[in-house]
Length: 302
Image (cartoon, rainbow, N blue to C red):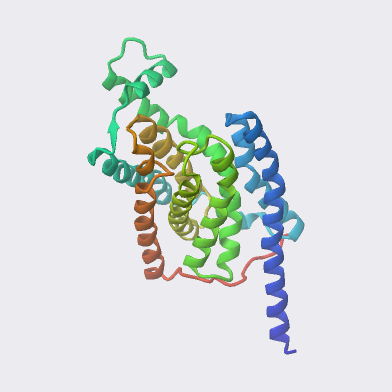
């Protein structure tokens, strides 16, 4: 066998072993978080335990496989990528919920949301408008601190480790599709066995909608990871998505009988919007010459 072929074979075998090691460790670490969230509920500490399992799997894989921790993308990068990451969920969230609200499939703003936000923030005597504005500002700024800390655990695994590893061998769309599928399947136990869904009905359809959404977002996050060479913009977008799309726009929506079919991460509107947004970033990646694969340029750790 020619030397180049032998080298390529060894490189391919190592690549498969690296990915398999990560996925096996991901399953092992995630089992702890699944146990807590399924048996004890979706409490913040249990969710944080689960959300950090991809990061722990990435760290362990790097250690076991001799991969440099620097490949996880620790540098902060240019500010424009962080601003883009923060504002993108606001944009596509407003588009998706704007369609929901404008079509009458969901209402805004829920009096229940105003009451709960006001009580949580201690805003006694404030008008509804004042409560709403103050709540959005506080949740969208100070509230991001907790969400970044939790989202970082996931993103170290998905975009810090898995995305650049896959980009060595596969194209931008294949990498984004694979990571989006793994990301979605990782959520499956929560969707089917906890209240992390739109209610205990049509769970297969909810899972399908959620999968389409995560794949769409995955295209965006792959782009940010490759262009910024940092895991931090992906972390900021993940946290901003959870803040605005779930905790603000989702919670302030008035739910009618069919709102669950159309709204949120488990309805049909947001996934459709994310397919369009993801397609745009796929186009940009192609135009900017980052469609991959990048090749095996990684240096092993000492």
